[in-house]
Length: 406
Image 1 (cartoon, rainbow, N blue to C red):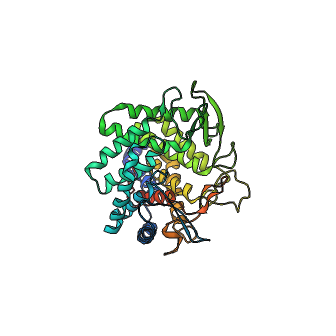
Image 2: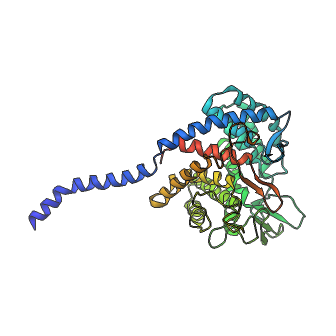
């Protein structure tokens, strides 16, 4: 017995080292970027930059890219007030960060001069998309002193759409008896957290937290899938209706909506360190990844409940948002779940980088990715390239290339 105890005592250091090696190997090996995929990403950056320089030639004056229709060779644009206007300069800035090609930076600066006036736009909830994805990205890539004030003014404008009776930022303006809030709005809260951080004014932070809490209570089903739209009574704050606008049905799980929620609650945890938001993000992730209707390549159908599977349309934009979100969420989540998130992001990046989704050079109107779905019920932007698909794809590439597990 004594000999056995002495033997165990001698072996303990070796056993402990072995255990730590296994744990360390588990964390590092499973979260270590793949060298082959990094080479693919390097090629993606180069090809994407060429595409966006091609796109820049097509734009004139105050135009922002919206989509491209290959069948008619029609390039569709918008003004600066469109909710997607910030993605084009944001993507240009990300690509400039990689290539240092001044043409990309010059084009980003040109379009941000047009976009700057939207800092005072109080008619939209999408100022996070519009201003933080552009000027916020610029602060990290090529900062200018005036960008900070533009973003502060943007946060002020966004905050005007918050109603404490409802506890949410209004999304779409409608009739007076409606107060419409969409799951997409979770993506605009990052701008408010930034505003509190740089100004010291906690009101922005409180609005973001209140909106997220109200959304968590009312937007999600018991399986953690989300409705697209919740209509509140503006006088009482009570829920009047839960429905969809861009999904297949009121009861269905619209793919991009699930991705917005995943990304949004991951940001909420980063900004607050409140574990209830981490739990929410993990629940949403498990709904997505355990869904029997998620294809093996992890590029979701436009709606998880869409009819016509397996030939139903895929949504590359939802996949790109998911990949970027998973690459952050895995840093906060240990064990098998964290590894699953990381490898799912890898799978998505590999597939979006392949010939099925990554546009051939000189085609696709200069957009990077093909096969996104804007709103199939409205027959709007169906199976076409979209600026936000490109933006979150390039963001995902950046996060993967620079990945360091915390």
